[in-house]
Image (cartoon, rainbow, N blue to C red; front, side):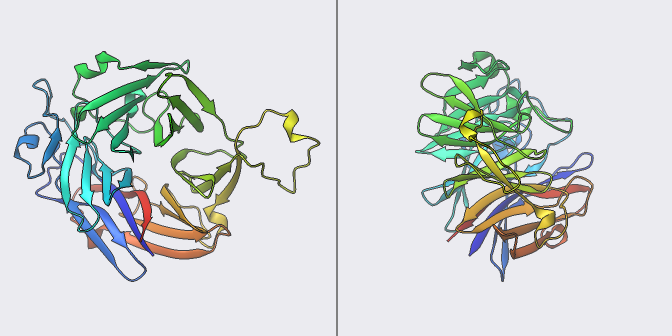
Amino acid sequence: MSLICTFVHGYEGVFHPNGELPALLKSSKDSTTFYSYEFPRNPNEFSTTNLKLIGEKPLKSAKNFDALPRFGFTGHSIEDNFIYCGSWNGVYKINLLDFKCEGLISHRLMNDLHGICISDGIIYTILTGKDTVVMTDLSGEILNTFTINNDISSIKDDHELKDYDWRFISKQFRGATGNFHFNHIQVKGDEIWLTSRNLGCFVVLNVSSGRVHLRTINQKTVVLLHDGVFKNNAYYFTSIDGKILICSDMEAHNPREVFDDVALFNRDFSSKIIRLEETELKRQPNWCRGIDVKNDLIATTIDGLYGSDLSFKLLVINHEGEIDLVKEIRWEKIGDASNLRYVTGFDISFIN
């Protein structure tokens, strides 16, 4: 069993990297290999980078950052032996055979990418601060955009969005971005399913009709949904406060709950919660992000919150909370810690 994991890191004050920075790892029980890449930030760096730029050059109106945003890879998605990794201002196309980058797909509507999805050669990303789904082809051309409004309606191809080069606009505040703070994104037929951290549920967009509806979750505790994956006919999510949420259409019968006829009630997805502090880990991690499932095993990353120790961990458990793997990733073994504020795992996948 091997895992790939993308991770991000942020710095105090003004930080200008010299060369490549670590952003991706491949790990088994016996070894861990790290991979580094260039991360152009300011407009002029897009013309001097060694990366192959696929898509749009920076607009002439683009400005330099006052303080550089985080580095590294965020959400990722795999198709045809390539892993597509999100970053602050683009999607990196990386060959899974040798982990070399074959191009940086980038255009003006890529900013602070969270979850990403690739399906049938189309990359789905989110302009999180504007609650906008962006569809991009592999040549970097914008195909469609859908902005979700507060009243759960959508606007297709809002041209005002293109007045700015969002790649060079920073988020200099903590917490949620946009009205919904969309994180996980996946495509199911004609629908795009988004998880909203602020609402704690799915927001579902039909691409053909432009109609939007909610799919709610019968939650039994406070959760802050982040990443998700659909496996074994169920949705598996992380809650950043150290929980795994398993949701499905099948009604979960809790022995503490007795009801006459559940069909009388309005209920959408049922859920089961795995609290990591109640597993063999025996503690609540300070962060939890990224998820994948293989058979009975669940992989996630834990710890790495701002201001904590400069490390995070890979965690693999089964549905009963028994630990299959826990591995600490310490920054001192992979990079320069000068001015480093935090390092944290972002997304994780099982690979063969």
